[in-house]
Image (tube, rainbow, N blue to C red; front, side, top):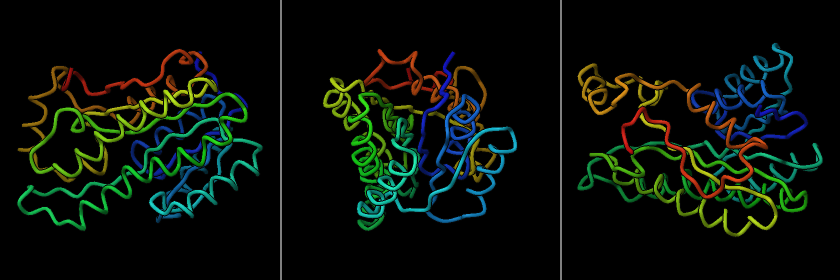
Length: 248
C-alpha cells in the first residue's frame, strides 16, 4: 500500500527534521524526491545521499519559498526536467516566538512570508503541472498550535492556522482536476525546533499529551506518505493531527 512508484515529489525544507523524514519516506515508497533547502547545502545533500544509498532517487534544489519568483522558476524547472510534479509537501517553515506585547512587526512579516506565502507560492507553481496531469497531492505542514494556540506564539500560531484555510480553498478549487490538498498538524515532535527546550518545559508539555510521549519525525512522515498516496484519493481539505491526543 501507499506505493509512489514513478511519482515526482517536492519536499520544501527537506534537509532536516520533519522535512527530511518525509523525503526519505516518500523515496522509500518509490517516489523521485526533490529536496528543497534555502541554506545548508550539505544537510540537503546528505538527505539525497541517504536516499540513493538505499536505492532510491533524490536530488536537491536550492530556493527560498518566500521568494515567489525564485520558487516559480525553480518549480517550473523541476517540472520540465522530470516532465511533471505529482506531489508537493510544503514543509518549509520558521518559528519566532515572543509574547504579543513584545512581538516585532518585522518578525510577524517574516513568519508570514515564509510559513504562509511560501507554502502558497509553491502550491501555485506546482499545481500547474498537476492540473495538466489531472492528478496531484498537496500537503501543507501546519502545527497543533495553529488550532489550539500557545503562549508566546501568537504570530507563529496565526501563520499555521492560515494554512488550514488555504488548503481547504485549494482543495475546492482543484477537486475537479483530481488534485487533493490536505494539512498535517504535528504536535510535540522531537526535532531541532523543540530540542532546545528546558527539561521543565518538556515535562510541562508532556503532561498535555494523553499518549505521554514525544512524537518522532517518522510519525509525521508516515501520515504524509498516506496523504500523498493513491489510497488517499478521496481525502481532501482535511487536517490530519499527529499529536498524541494533545488536541482533539
